[in-house]
Each structure stands twice: as structure tokens, then as C-alpha cells.
Length: 236
Length: 236
Image (cartoon, rainbow over all chains, first blue to last red; front, side, top):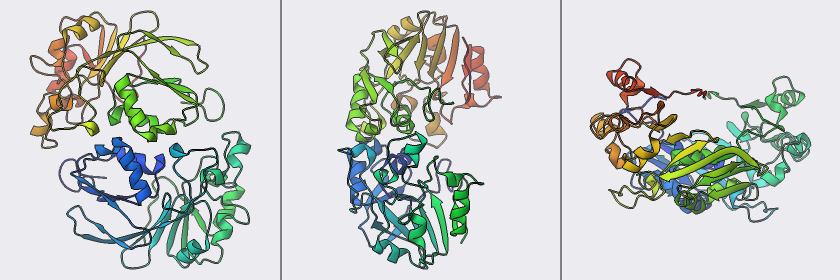
């Protein structure tokens, strides 16, 4: 992207965090250190930023931090603090604490704001961004029903895939991710929800849906899903 | 790089840190989380890792942390803890605390191990890796005299270049970097040191030595320096 103004600005006016794991927050360290922007997050994730002084590289007098309450639609602001016309609402989804904060070998799946889904809207129907979700719930199904666009956790095809491939010792569930296949998997969970466009994101490199000619790719496409790719461009 | 063994290994057996700033340590967050390796650093930099729990993503039972004393030649180990045949020695160079730990507007230049130079050898003459250095000292000149290879801080051409370009409010000195030009600059400081090969690294995007046809590029090359580039390959 090109600077929208000045020699070094970026067009990024704000960042909404969905969790405190490295893949969700380490990108903050590569943003410009003294450009006005706002970081939005639930309180447990904001606590992670506070507890890691390295994130103070985003200068506190320039980069605002705003705690988002769960389940409240909140206006996203432009750098000059005027409303952007976009709104965000975050909501807890089943997940676990970040990997580096795990205190034991089997951290419980919690629903407390450590992991959230994000709804963004401009006054019309929202889009949903949910890169990590450990289980489908009745509340989440109700929220997603009839949605125009959902980006959803596509980490694994099946729960024991990393163990069987010999590349890890954890199930998907242990890592805080619902798998795509199976009677309680993502494909089954979205049946009947009437979501207009569904895109898999956060796909682990063990997941056969990444292969264009796999049976699993054919299965997700038959169920109406798209597989995200680098450089993907979404136009409403 | 390809795995040297297994499906997911990397050939990285160890990491030696030269400071605690984001550009020196954030890369740790992109390493494999459960691959045996050793992180080596001076105590002030190891304290930074301890004070930021996000670095615990490198599992403590798998990734060793070894505090390097200053001015002591220490063997670098293979993942199985056998000697690698390489040795490292770190030594304090003038610098400042990391940006995100600055307590006031004019942090002092210190010589306490927050910023170090790194010497690596295999029993023959060492190479030196010094991406940040706020001033040349007599001790550093003595250490570098006659060296076979030095990678050195090439951040700015002159001290006020970012201010004059309108892209920042700080001098090079304020950021903890010696500039290339001027009577006390890097080019002048290396005169008579008889270093066989000298390569500029850590070059800011405001520095005209990056332009192949600039007078400043011609000046550094006339003084016997090379300008590093992405993908550069060094063969002894």
C-alpha cells in the first residue's frame, strides 16, 4: 500500500484484535511506531499487551488503546477521532488462553473474551471474522444465521491430522480449533445457516483443503465454502 | 531453507541477540515453537525476554536461554549440546536502551550490554557483526584492527538526515547510531584499521548509499565498503 499522506504514513487507521496469540498480535510490532491509529481489543487481550512492554514501541501518546466491551456495537474512529462510518462488535467464542500463557498440559476451553469473533458493518449487514473457534454454540449459530459474509477458522480438516502426519502432538481441539470434518465439525455446523458467502481462513499447512485437487477441497467447495489465498480481494 | 531432518525442522541451531530492540528480537516469534535451539544474549537483553511473556512461546523445556558474559569467548552448541566448532564473543558497544523502554526524551548513551557487538569464529580470525553502534571507541578500534570481515551499522549517511527529509524528529545519535559521514563518522573511524572486508548493514531507507548511482554510494565504495542487499551470500 502507498502512503495516503506524507512520506511515511500507512492507510491503517485502526487494528481490531481477535485474541492474544502470537499470530494475532505480533504484527503490531511491524506497524509504524509514531503513526496515529487505534488498537481495539477485549480486556483479556489488552491485558496481554500491557503485560508485554515490547508493545509500548507503539508510542502511547500516538497509538490509542481502546478496550471493546463484548456484545456492544461500537463506532470505529478515523485518526482524527471522527467516526469512520464503520462499526465493530466483538463477541466471545470458545477458545483457550494464548499458548505462551498456558499453565498446564490441558488448558480448558473458555468463553471469556480471550478469543473473540469480530462483526464489522457499515450500517448494512455485518461481515464476520472468526479465525479461531473451538466449538460451535447455539448462540454463535444464531448470530451467523443469514450473514452476508463469514471468514471462519479452517485450521484442520480433522482433529488428529497433525498427530497422524507426525508433525505435532496436539489435536485441533487441544489447540482451540474446531475441525472442518465430522458430525460436529465446521461444515456440518454451518448447514442450514443460510450464510451467503463463507471463506476459510487460518488454514494450517497440514490441511488437505489447501491442495486444489484434493477430495477435501472438493468437499468444502461442494458445501459452499471458498478457501482463502494470499492476495485474495473481496468486493461486496 | 529446507528441513535438515523431519517434516518441520529448520537448520537454525541457535540465535545470538545483539540488543533488545524490536528489530533484534521480534524474529524470535516466528521461529518454530518446539524445535531444539539455544538463544544467547547478554543479561540486559535476556531480561527483556523475561519481562515479555510472549517470548515464552519458544517453549522453555525445548529452547534454552544462555546468558553470555561480556568479553568471554564461548562455544556455540549444536541441538544435541555437542560443540558446533563455532565460538562467539559479545562485547558492549555504545548504545541506548530499547525504544519501548526509554524513560525520558533523551536517554543516555550507555556501554553496559544493552547493545553489543558479536564476534564469531571457527578457530581462525573472527567476523564481527555490529548492526547498532552509537560511537567509535578506542577499545572497539583495537578489537576491529586487522579483522577479516566486519558487518557494521550503516543506518544513516548523516546525523540529521531524517529530520531534513521530514520523516522523523530524531538525529542518528539520538537513535543510538553513529552516522557514516563526518569527521567522527564511520568512514573516518575505520581509516587505518586495515579491515579486509567491510559491509554496511542495518541501513535506513533514508540513506542515499542505497542508491546505486549516488555520490554517497561512490564515497563508501571508494573507502572500501560494500552495501549489503537482500539475499547477499558471503563466502570466505
